[in-house]
Image (tube, rainbow, N blue to C red):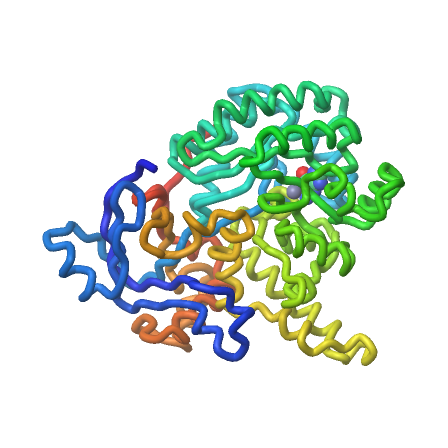
Length: 472
Ligand code: GUN
Ligand code: ZN
């Protein structure tokens, strides 16, 4: 990989393991260096550790000192929609009506290269301002939108996953794509963009409501012919959608089986949402190595429901999870705000399971797993997301050899009272991992994208507070 050289000094926090495996001692899954040094060569982490240890190995380095900041690995958005940047925040509909009334009319515009190019400037600016350094994105059924997306990501040297949207029913005629066109255009896009620079390709049947069996068959064929590619879709987001999939696929016992019979469920497969998946479906996700992208901001915004976080994390059948904004279903680009929503969904689940609503449904262990501590939260947003996307060999923490995407958080930024709020923990900056975690919890429930002061991609700073976008 090509990238920049740099050396950054400051306070670092990252996750080395899954904190759900460290009940009562979650800090052991994380690492905090109050004064650390990160050395980057050609965009990769060449050295990392306590400043005093690392500096002796690199005399004469030019060092950028990020004081009063917490430096974390870049945030990973497992589920976002490039062509929805302008329709974020649409009023009054649940999923299926929202798609028809707001989303498809907007996405059709992305056939126009100029429109898509202008949108890409907004999209990537917002992404970087939110501290997101990698995303798995939906584009549209027009190859132009995929081309523009990959080109814009490559200009910024960003690790992204994306692909042409397959949809051959349940949308306006001029938005649909035939299964044959989807197949041929996907192949040509894979040729041009998969593993070119940091780009990765996802075969993308949009969702089973919008995909006939012929479209799903073509998706299976593509995955068989390109097993190295990712697969990205939606599943069990909204109750009416789930019923409609039952009608469209009467031979499948549930929504998950639609993907099983088409050979898609497995490693490098991500489905967004999964709010209404049964226990049995979650088990099949777990055993196959497939992932769910948990999108609480969208699930609340569109009224889809409460994802059963604690159930999906049952140690007997733990599902790989990323976090997704699902922007524009989610009404912001900020994964920090998604963590806030995820925390609240988890707390609602906790109430439903602690026996206070219905003593027969009490499950203390699952109730506990729903509590999103800062360790758990930032695990999902970094290393956990990377694992769910099968990218933890290159992303997710500050292991030497990984790609140097990182962010600098200002724990005092955000709402006017944030600085005073955080001063309850420290005014000097964190000196212990517990203090760092407490500040991070403050960031996730009081902060937002204003907490992100800088975003670095492959060793190069691409965003600093105050930067603006040159777009129409
Ligand atoms: N299901 C199919 N398409 C979409 C979409 O664009 N957003 C969401 N949230 N769900 C979908
Ligand atoms: Zn989505």
